[in-house]
Image (cartoon, rainbow, N blue to C red):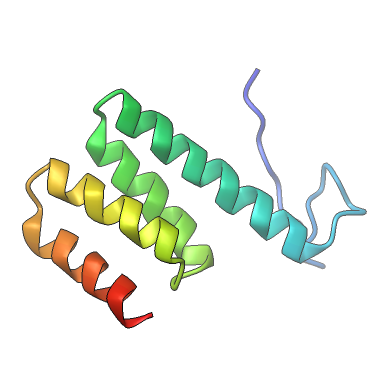
Amino acid sequence: METRWVVSTANTRCARCPDMEPSDFKARCMKALEQNGDVAMDFASHEDAVAHYSTALSLDPLSAVLLTKRSKAHARIGSWQDSLEDADAVRVS
């Protein structure tokens, strides 16, 4: 069974777990997206991995771990410029 997260726009808390702090919810979402990207990489679904890592990065644009993983995924599909941009962003941060 797939878990779906629903965010209440009124207080930015998860509707399924209203006692969870928004920062905890954000961290759990980022971790889930990162894990989905890792699984996609394991199955050589590099475009999907880029999508998952990109969504996770929308929550924390300066995450060196996520930028590194997305850079690797870009390289696997031959998106050299995107790979280099992510690698440079890691170097700067």
